[in-house]
View 1 (cartoon, rainbow, N blue to C red):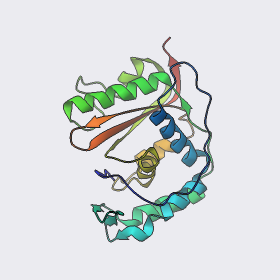
View 2 (view 1 turned 180 degrees about the vertical axis):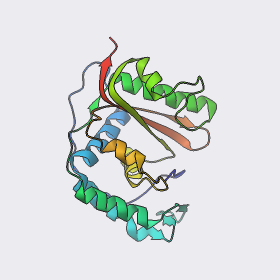
View 3 (view 1 turned 30 degrees about the horizontal axis):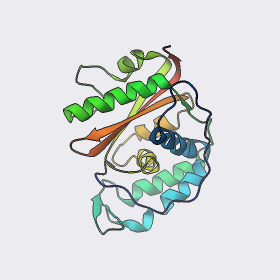
Length: 210
């Protein structure tokens, strides 16, 4: 779902894997994202419980917020139920590791879309995720990118990537649970149409530029 409002739902108290940061420490917001991503990746069954709490809020394809506003989804509760089934079967994976270079690549694309108001993986200069990553180091093995448009906490955004409403192949979810992806970076910026854009860049490995 591309939500233009903050997604509000009951969330359980959780513990997450928090790494020791060094060179180029991420911001507090980026650390919250990493924490939410690793909560889902290392404890998928626990994360499933927070998605289940969303189910009573659906009326057909509409999701009801606490303030009475509604968000129209494409699949309704079916997508959430399917995500819950996936998480309950998913084996825990190794946590993601922060990459300064991927963080810069993600922030670069977020800032580009802040300036242009555009959507998608291509930047205004024609670059793609692999091009932007190589400006700040060298990606190794494979590379991917998730983008979210809208307001919400990092945990809300991760939940939407896992639910992946309207995405037939659940590609955003697959990126989060691909064992080969170990390094990530996150960049966020205001967006003139959706309020905020969050960009997640992933790679199997990444050689940082020093």
